[in-house]
Image 1 (cartoon, one colour):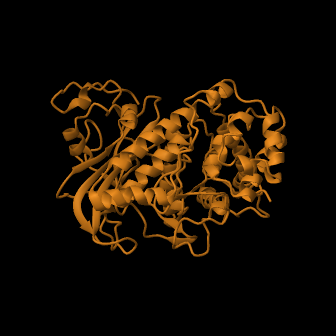
Image 2 (cartoon, helix red, strand yellow; image 1 turned 30 degrees about the vertical axis):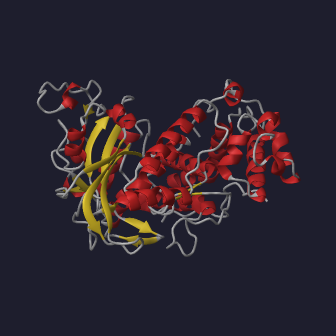
Length: 503
């Protein structure tokens, strides 16, 4: 059977201007034309964060720098020494936050409310505009203890940092709205962890996000019954991230649409985040904070990433429901500023918007045009495709590559799964795919010699093999080669994607 479109029998109930830098002695950032610092979050007030000091690490070894992402915010010109100063010792960037800020928030963890959360091993380091004018955050992971660390050491294992870099690179290649790993630096400390061999190596990661405002950020002020700061947070979120929103209900609608689209992108990428707590869902619908993530080898709705998710709450097939539930918690936070009668109908649009987004994203990955004015026809095609993928146990990414452009016979016949595709399970799906017209230029791209004959994957076995070389021999060859291969894969897939469409 095809995995059903997202459906729930009942809805979850709601209970800057460019600054010219002239001091060339600061560093090479001063000469960067597109470095546009724009500190906004600190204007919210002291109830939103705690100024903190970064850890003083014994050693700084640069393991990964993402100049592609850095170029979007004017930081690609940094020397390696400057890079280490800013992203290892956390010396302030010019005209930016003078002191890092550990952000305050609450959240539901596996649907149990926790009022003791907050940035426990990270902080907001800087804010700036990207080339398109969006407000962007530089946030950290593993940068030291904060008032919210509780009993933790505020550190990140090197393996955890490596895994986050690999996750973000693969998701970006597959077209998922994800944070970007900007920097990974090994820090020379030995860490003890219960879920991997210890002592283990340490690192600090810097990520580039559109926002670090979480559903849990709103939940904190609702819990504290601080409606004044709740209103301030809403006004800030609308002004900086959803400027066309006309009020609380319209803001909720924008977030619902963005999160529905993210859930659909995860589905079409075969990605399991693993920990969909409310503090891990941002109001911009951007995937971030990668812990026990996995990519599917084959389509299995019950596939669970986290070993501690004993009930399968965040299994692959339950991710849409988890997002829906989390959005209901955001809706609750807006009740003091609006009314349930306005918010509940907006929340209940999520299932339909997820289904629409899944059709758009899946057809986009396959390079096929949508059926104008007939969304049900799109939905039937998508259901046939995922149904065949699930029943046949075909390799998830392999099937997408083989079917791009409409299940072209010349490609299917050369696939390692050629015999599988001739079976009854695939026949209806393949017939429907061949009836659909490819997006302009897709057929030529697929038939070109540069289009991948083999899929790039990021399965757990591959990640463990990459880590083994680092752990045993300090050999980063496989890590660097994988990133190069994934980026090349993303460039080729990008040639088959239609223009982005809002859902």
